[in-house]
Length: 409
Ligand code: ACO
Image (tube, rainbow, N blue to C red):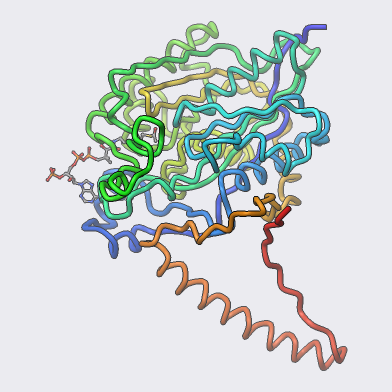
């Protein structure tokens, strides 16, 4: 039987614990906190730990979305992972996520539309559900951009961060709610304005591509800025019109978090006051496909979204792609609390014959090494004093430490 609507019933996000501040970047390239804040609105961004990957970030966000929805992973029919930083060229990140979360019958695939990826994936999930093909679809946006960012290039390295967000879309027999209108566009004239030149089959990895730093993001920032301010506003307006609404009907605008100036320009074009626009670019930077679902999950968690609200998600990115979706919210925001029970550690099976080096960009390792050593010393000192106290109370007891693990088959 065909459902009457496809609704978001779960949501969740995960941002790695490592924080890279503007002050850190001042030590790497010729930039300043003042320049970064005033030109982009970004204060800090997150960076994946050595044992983390797009699969692990995506899996934590997915588990949180399932917990919020109170849906068993076995019920998932399809896993869509929007990403341009997959763990490998193949297998897909979605296949690895399926193994981590344990969804025996789910189909799984990746979707590449850069920063617009999650909006593209959300509309795909809607189509699968409304056609009657699948009832429960996990829609994940996840990126580890730090591993394709050139930390010697001030034009790009200040912009990007790592993270993951997820939504669970499910068939409902109730009418109303879910996707009301959408718009997806591609303008390939900008295809080489944000791109990673090497590592695909056009320029396979060679010593020469490594020498030219061809495996990192290259971007024409000015041109991309011009494109984004135009396309975000027009895509959002088209989607709103197709939903039979006007910008006045929109309770919250959840845009791609690339640059506060871009967000403000689009809000102005749509006549939206700041309290109707969700912003977290200051804390995460641009996390590409993860940006909108992280912002959505945070907004719901913080009480900014109520049942009956009409929301607009809108994004732009490499391609040039853009995507906008208008959605009527139906879920209970209080369910967000269930995500808190899901910790950040997941086990991603690694291949037997391959041991990876620390994938943290070499320029960043000294910051994190120094901070993590200091944190370990503090933890040791605290454990020492609490062990002393514990010994007094119960001789022989030890404080366990939790180390994230990766299992080899
Ligand atoms: N610190 C200091 N100076 C800098 C920095 C920096 N980090 N980066 C660039 N500059 C310099 C430039 O070299 C330039 O100097 P010049 O005039 O001597 O050449 C000057 O600052 C101004 O450069 P502009 O490019 O005009 O600066 P602008 O105000 O446009 O801001 C920015 C640059 C932030 C990159 C902006 O253009 C932007 O946000 N563009 C959109 C980028 C974007 O969102 N990309 C994401 C696509 S997502 C995806 O699909 C992966």
